[in-house]
Image (cartoon, rainbow, N blue to C red; front, side, top):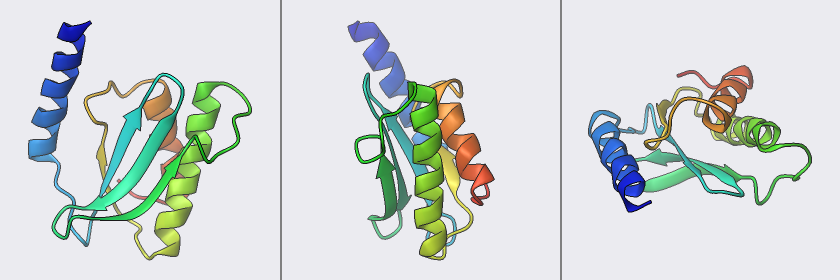
Length: 114
């Protein structure tokens, strides 16, 4: 178990070196736990969170992929309300598959560009 955790951490840090969020194009960061999924849009130059959404706040109806879709559309709506339409996607060391992919695709469908 510890080897998997350090592998994910290594991947996350390798991705984080390449993906930087600016005020013009902030970073959409994803964290997933066993029960929930969290997304936040971060401006790394100022160190502030512009918008966020999580499955804790969303309704828990359906399976985890459906909940991730609703989180993606919620974070996209929050970004567009604050005037942010273009972001950089930070998958956080997770594979672009399942819940992470569902969140990204629903955010794109809701109007975010990345």
